[in-house]
Length: 349
Image (cartoon, rainbow, N blue to C red; front, side, top):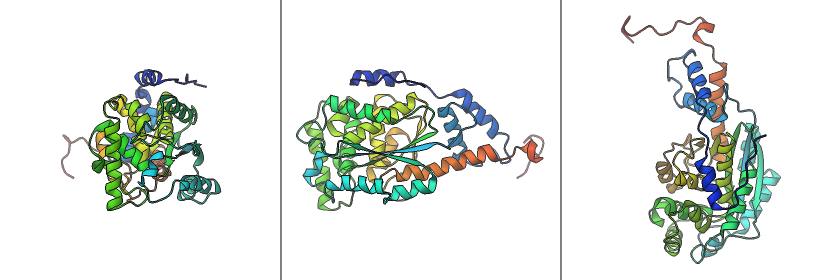
């Protein structure tokens, strides 16, 4: 089994990112070759064809597989919740974790339907991060502990890793993190989260701006931005995405907070998220802005903003459909279907 030396400091993380493996071009070429033989016009399945090639490239094999997907759902609490940025009290995080364990949440139903194993990871719920308007949310050791924990959730040989999160006030943290990584003010990144509007939404934007002002001068380093403005669960997701790249495991990201955590790696080095697809675009307005910044197009747009990995698991169905078409369709030769005539031999539609 492939072993990853756990990083102990931010410099170790930077070294791992610099050594990220590239996509497996041999497997990708095999996918393109088979695609060209299937009983359909070239490109007729659009992004499904692209998904299959992407999956082969990052699994490092052809044909691709989707029999062993895993959802990792990370939950953490945020000290910034004390500033009134959420419509729900911080106790809801632990209550929802219990709901996940009991099988009563939306994500439980989607995982059961899709036959996806779900693992819930509680990230020091009794120790919320600090209020990032007054001090760093985490110190480096806490951030590294969360990142390495997230890394251990990934195992070599997994077909697909779906990622999700739960944490009251984490959309505020995600908005601040995005602003720290890519610029802009709070009002450009904040959204309703659990249901904030009007004065509440304006308060949320001011809180983000206060955090940016407090940490000004320290945010050019993406890892510093993560520890100062992020959270335990966000750092764990960053670590999981990092480990997945090292272990050749393709990743399906969920919504705004999840993508924000992954974007830390993009800010460290462009191309760091090539092994990731974004499951859906959230109704959080900052998510569309973030996708533009990292050059990603979500697979689904369903007006959702629940989190929990729901968009990632739903998008898994598209990936499986892509694999089913790629592996199950007959070739022109097998089906005894004539191939397209050369354009210089015959014209017409």
